[in-house]
Image 1 (cartoon, rainbow, N blue to C red):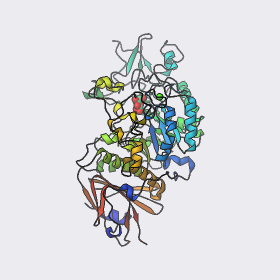
Image 2 (image 1 turned 135 degrees about the vertical axis):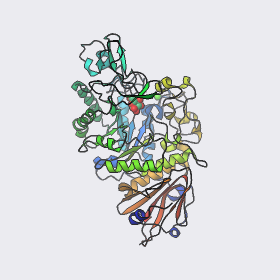
Image 3 (image 1 turned 180 degrees about the vertical axis):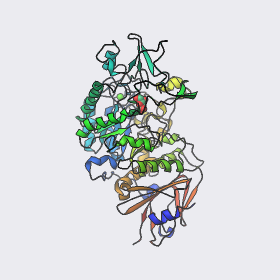
Image 4 (image 1 turned 90 degrees about the vertical axis):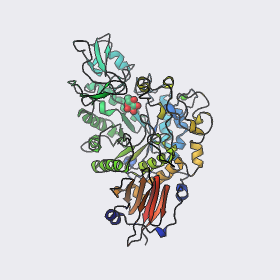
Length: 583
Ligand code: GLC
Ligand code: CA
């Protein structure tokens, strides 16, 4: 296998194997030890902080439990701000901590302007914002725009009578003549998307659980109330929002049935395409209004989108026609790939690069709704889940877009899935067992050290069991080990923050290769080459000499070696190197 001759020679130059000492195969720390303190974010224009930034997703229930009641809380996050800073995170995205009956662990909000007592108080959020600010860590909240809890006062009013002033805050429709739901729309959390209210004898609509009735965004009062809620936290110094489930904010007013396909979903409901109850054009006009009327009043504030688009062309719509919609619609399509292969990744990343012209990309590989990347794909013989963590980390942290890291991803945390239905917490898992085990496995407590409960708390039973590998896989142990996943991430994050090429362009090289994803980042007169062997077999990448006699200066390496003019990569091998011209 050769690096695409013309392309590579023409654009990147090449390396003389003799001019660099061979790197030991598993030696990332010897090349670039992780920094003791993380260098500053290189962004010059302050309001663009997110472009060179890293967003760290914190699931408060699982991060750190300061009062030892088994449930993580905001003071737990405050306590670990030094760690978050040491990682080089520029912002945390804290998933919902608002008052909630917790039917969907916070994604069922009963008061947007407050904090659930199990997580703390508004004063705790103020403290998190203030102490984060002192450390260069901004706080983003999660704005659940599609629905509220069925215990939200708006819904309690709404369902009380057909003439209540809040009736139109939600989507109510009459039953069909035979009493059945108004149409065939299914909830993605199982069953019909319509629930009959016995008092007023109409159905209300819910894309998710019945405890999560959809708001009616066609009602200007809903817009006003939700925009006020968004602004309430911005005034307190919050830096913006990750917008939950934006695709489903609107549904077709004529309630056209969805097309049904063969087969059933995990809950036994016939498959359907959700075309008429998601991705409606009004989503974009509404998000642009949120941006203009709320977010842009506060410089530097951002909107990140939970945008489950089918491809980059669809994603690009979320930037808005004049970059006036979301700053960071997350490209989540790498998560949904059944396998991470070089051709699939190349095609998707190139798609984002070519389509998001003017907008800034954002990538994620793990989150609280998906199996952890370390546990998602088969491990080739001789490799380990740590190697998956290193290669996915190398990918995420060397792409041009803003990475969104999920807590514990930097430790190589793996899924710890429930084995018995009795142990399941997530309702999806209870309803869908055993086909759908729910999302508990990726939400287990953060692993801080080797003490009881991994340092999550002072010994009370955590709401989900700590993963059995915590004695060796934890922040304390991995900080002390130069070969750990955490050290590898710190090395790459420091590289991202200091190397001029990492603020520059992205370009695929050797674009026919089926094993190795190869690309270069170029900026400030410098170039970094990234080689990722995503294959279960070893690969050799010949590095051709050119007249300029450039050398490769290794920056981060795992399971790879430069020998006699080739980079040899074991399965899941990573080779990140600067291309340095010889004067
Ligand atoms: C989003 C959240 C998920 C939640 C759903 C309903 O997809 O990430 O956790 O269950 O919205 O609010
Ligand atoms: Ca607690």
